[in-house]
Image (tube, rainbow, N blue to C red; front, side, top):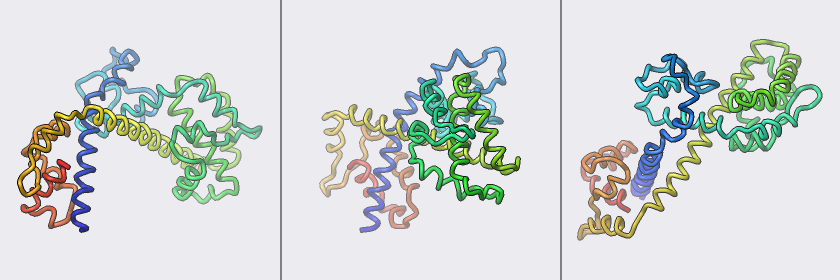
Length: 289
């Protein structure tokens, strides 16, 4: 029973990942093309602005000017997704969002976490604080007002990384908040650690949110493209014993040759029973159903 559940779960995950990746791959240039005019054409070594360049700084050289500017490895889909996600984050930032964030600034310079930032990070305020807090190792950050320091650092990271185009809206508030952090922490290394942790968290969560949204939209696209004819083709490959052969229809949807699909999906498990040669018809049936 456990092996059967693992088989079905692995097949489900594999099919969903492959079908959504196929949709994303087909559309992966769309957002990047929107930024084409902003990428310098006279400097081959130019890198994308803001934290796109920071994250992918030092990446391998690529022949395409856009890919050079973004600095990601074209052979890795994850890097394509990350690069697109970072662009989407910047594109979605607006002066209005920036104003909403900085309106939470108090007289001493700290900025409370607003719903705007929490929504962009797809995480409740309390969870943001409790997730980052254990990652801080500098003892000089063990302060009673650490939650306020963290909230301020998260806000600053979002403004700096996601909204560089709207710097005029938030720059003075940013400077005041940085002074607040310096005055409270009174240690350059500790302050740097706090800001770096905030940057890592903001970048990671922004990427996760965009990629998750793209996956969700891709699933809808796949579902909408499913036709009765495709379903008929799949079920026509059922054997007398109830097992299925993997049809060309399925393999086209998951963008992998029929001859490779079972070998690839088996990599999802370490279960000896599910990796054995006799498991091949099980995998074919699980993929079809």
